[in-house]
Image 1 (tube, one colour):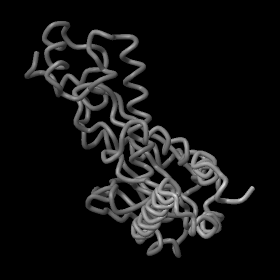
Image 2 (tube, one colour):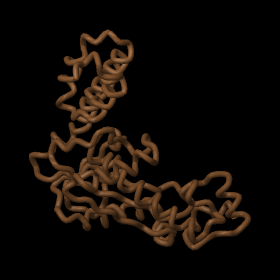
Image 3 (cartoon, helix red, strand yellow):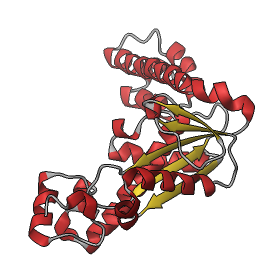
Image 4 (spheres, helix red, strand yellow):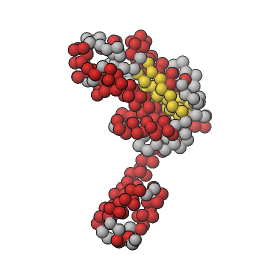
Length: 255
């Protein structure tokens, strides 16, 4: 079938189903088609290609710390989720990615939608060399304070890795009682691909857990606010009192 006899819908389908490496052939094939609908399809996919190219440049910039330390061996990103909430555990993620691993649109978990985090979680789990999670319970947070509990969760995540890393890239902190070399990076979840991956793993793991708690204690609305101190959450605490997963040291002034 000649190109000028194909419908716009057919051409759209060709582009939608084409592999990335064959797009240039399609651009060339339809470059002389004067129909405005075809031009719109080509323009749309050109913009997508440009956006993809920019994304790959961004990802390469986010690999700078990994490239700097990969000569020492396995590089592991560490991050946490849940230091600030009034309820639920603090969760730490530890992720070792392969060299030059490409996970498009991976970023600091706070910059991503819940739907995007869930999709990236699955891709990280599929592509990573090793992933581990550590947690500290609300009771443990009350016992030793949130900072020490965060460190404890991070140590648990590191210990659970099936591959021992030689370098840890941490989001801002240096973890005590860890013999592995550490590189604290301010705002590391936006600067390091491994830390960004760890932030997604920690965040999704914790959010899923808070949704499970919501099914057991729906009156607090954990599925919506994930334990953070929203107005609705604080009102629920005043109305129903504390639950088994509330951090007593965090809510004493509310009660």
